[in-house]
Image (tube, rainbow, N blue to C red; front, side, top):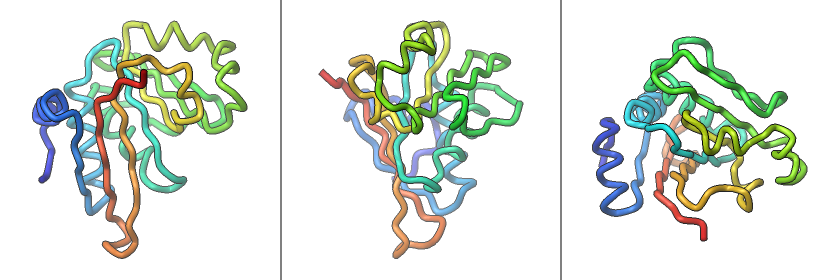
Length: 162
């Protein structure tokens, strides 16, 4: 089933707890992120996992556009956190790929963002799972070369970690 409408995505997540979407191009991956970003609300945390080069940044760029953010969005690999404030809600975009352990997140003051007025999107969140809040939306992106170079399998799951 194809999900392009953020309200539809959230309604299915609320009812079933999980959505499986397939995209066939970077534009479709962007559009899925945008649809979800349009419906995101303050205090929500989205985690984003997947191998390098799988399209996490493309998804995030769409998500940011859905929040009304127009500036260029890149992966904050070397800065760990990038803050975008000009949208309808602030976006706190984390990339924790280079975090040695979850305690390093204390130095950033992660709790101010996790429990703040914006939306958190955390790439490589599996590396800091022990500090993530119980309620979050987990997004995993995978390639399948047998289905085409641009094919992506995107699972969106409402989760309680504990």
